[in-house]
Length: 152
Image (cartoon, rainbow, N blue to C red):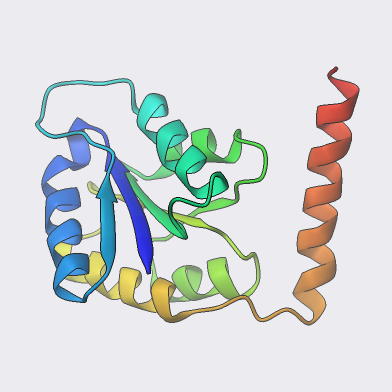
């Protein structure tokens, strides 16, 4: 699977660990930064990862910051992207199965290294379940299109 990954300076160390873990799993990883602990504007990273998914360059994305919240907010501003903060196994699974998210976000100040690896595993092996969730995800997409059309 082709996976985009990106973070801010608060999550640099965890991103490096998760990136190496993904590579060891045999995943194809594209790193959108950051590459050190120098402060950055994390929305720039979130948008780059989101665009790579929309353009089909990557299938899924993992974004990390201090809490995961800012990255999720930013990614969700990109039309066509659904992102969710995943801090426990159930949310990681349901993010995919119920909401068909393309991007999981993690908080480096919230989850430890081993839990982060577990959440990544759960999220990557989960697929959209469809069923009753299909109508809900379709409604999200309809609202997104409606808002975009009304803003023109």
